Image (cartoon, rainbow, N blue to C red; front, side):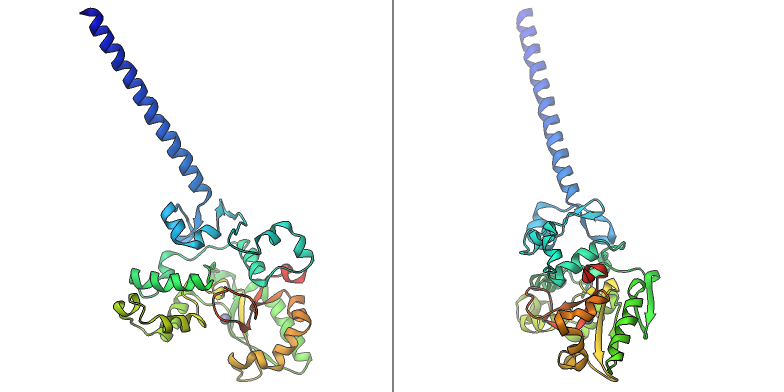
Length: 305
Ligand SMILES: [Zn+2]
């Protein structure tokens, strides 16, 4: 009898021990998994880093592409054909990296945060907003950092990032020397301003049924070919500018203007001299809007090299 009790007790102890080992193994696996996700924290809401689930990562290609390591981007963009080029640095010497990628590189170093959840609201209805946002992301729109007001300064009546103002002045002077007048009609733009612009084009209210059934797809795509959604405009960075040519000039004809001819000459030699690149050039695919000859971005030395 006593032997039997000892035997049962022994088994029980063995089982409990195995149970503990099993539980601690699960814990360590969980910890490993968490670590993995922490390494892939993304700039998201409130500028803070947010852990993302596997499901979110599969659903949103943005998260997959722009992986954060601590405060710095890993510089990995698996989906892009340009990724290898940046990392080798070889093409930098050959000036062969696309403006889109150079701006991305530049933006990573800006010491400001990505938009918060509030900034990303389009209509305030999660389903409608997601529907439109997915379409925008499919076109190639990316989240952009929002520059703090303190880092802005007025240039010809528009707010621009302080660090660009000297080069803007010089660029405008160079064009003036050639007998033409550049104008700026847009510099920094807040996410809330972007929301107003987008909604003025899409309509201030949308029928949920019509959006989700795809009835408004054509209108939505049409607007997205010209306008970004809040949080996804390069203008949030204060480093993107819309130029016009001459007094009362408008954006539409800018690509045909004499100002544009001066800027575009010799593969944008003049803008590059002052740190500017075309923002949405012809021939680049998957960049969000259709080509915008009037928009330039400042990337400093990345353009000058
Ligand atoms: Zn613009």
